Length: 117
Ligand code: 5GP
Image (tube, rainbow, N blue to C red; front, side, top):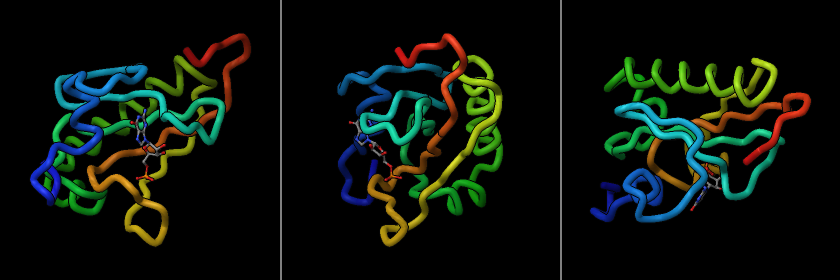
């Protein structure tokens, strides 16, 4: 739930209420292609539930879950790209955070011969 009590957009993607191209999933984490990609590989990686609004809260409250997000990012970068990547956590409205359900942006170059879908 978000601070408004409504499920966040990412919770609704995790529950399959809203469609997305899901590229990885664990018991607690889901990863899907960003609807407005800013790089050849642009994947949103997020906990399935939304109790943490940003990465600072997540690191304090559940560092193991943060480590799981990093591990999912690393695995996806190896399969979708060349293993090298940027991992961005927008933290706060003034730096562009629009969804207050913690998430990482995985940004990477396209692997030679790879496809986004
Ligand atoms: P933020 O700006 O909060 O760091 O990142 C939110 C991201 O979620 C944006 O890059 C935006 O394009 C993406 N996004 C927002 N709504 C949807 C959606 O319904 N589906 C998908 N796949 N991505 C979304």
